[in-house]
Image 1 (cartoon, rainbow, N blue to C red):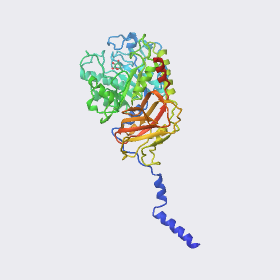
Image 2 (cartoon, rainbow, N blue to C red):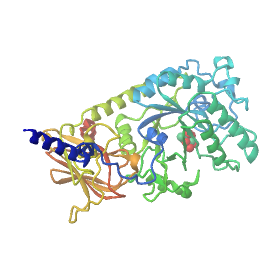
Image 3 (tube, helix red, strand yellow):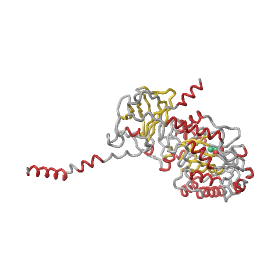
Image 4 (cartoon, rainbow, N blue to C red):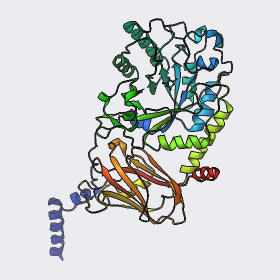
Length: 497
Ligand code: FUL
């Protein structure tokens, strides 16, 4: 009896000392580290921006009162009088109604009229009858947005048709930077700034000191994203219809970009898989034909807005939707109704995910079942978790590459939208992919990025959906996969009949 006790104690002692019991328990709990990122990767501010998906532009100013798109700079401030201006209505009935988490205001458009009382010019709201010259549209909107949890951004046109120093390089750059400082120091956090490369063909020659501007902006607003044709944080998508390229890389080579250069629009549209800079594109488009409000224009139909959504958000971009306040200082009823329809359509489509409850398996899983990179991560609704295959995976043959498959789907659930998302915090990787339902190909595409939406002409159903990633920059990392039904596809088909 005594000797068996002794034996047991000795055995335990031996196992503990030899590192067999306690260390092996903790070994099982040690997670597999994530793979290395595929550079370049987004900054924290760029990642936050990307996840906004829909943001809103407000084009408002002198043009609102003159029925024009580009003012001359000779307009009298006396005509600026939006008697019923209510910035809270812009946020509630337009931005929040459309699900936009950031709004950008044209603080100064090409005509040079300032929507805030700038100390450096008298061409501003201070000279207008509105609020007896004591108003500040920038402040009213920034405050209304902040009160409602919406972020704020500004557009300050470099081309200024009013300012007399325009054309004198040093003087105008000093003037412009003084205005920048006002906008970036008086109104709290500014999340995005828009530098527009546009100017008229006959505009006075002028060199903008972009590098000085950019550095000053970053000094004054540490977490801001700077938009221009060439970034540095967000780039123009190369068109004003809201469409990204069907191949759309967030990566690009900034050395190839020049602000205001029409020759680079195709490059901007698609980006560059070999790009050394992370500068994702933003799709700017107006809900109406013009950027500014005109009495005789109306909002685009819902079907067109949805098409834009698929070609912007569904192609790895952020949609910057412009909604112009009218001369009363309110967003017109027709626009607010359309924005609510738009949001509710998005909720109808994406509110139900037929992939939920399915089983996920993949060509391989980094670290095996307990490694933290399981195929099932694509079904957890969390953009930060992802499926990662084993790095060395190369399965030869026809289906070479990586795949992930959802099975045990309800065969009666019809879907016509396939949503695929990459874990872009780790870099954008996928170059070519295919989607199969029960073995039949239904969709294919090149890039994925933050979100790729395949909208099918004909609804599909089946027990399995497989995504085959045929080419990628390193192992692909998928954060989410969803299957949805879009009733508007069929409605627009029926109308076309
Ligand atoms: C363009 C401008 O010329 C338009 O008026 C508008 O502001 C649009 C967003 O950018 O370049």
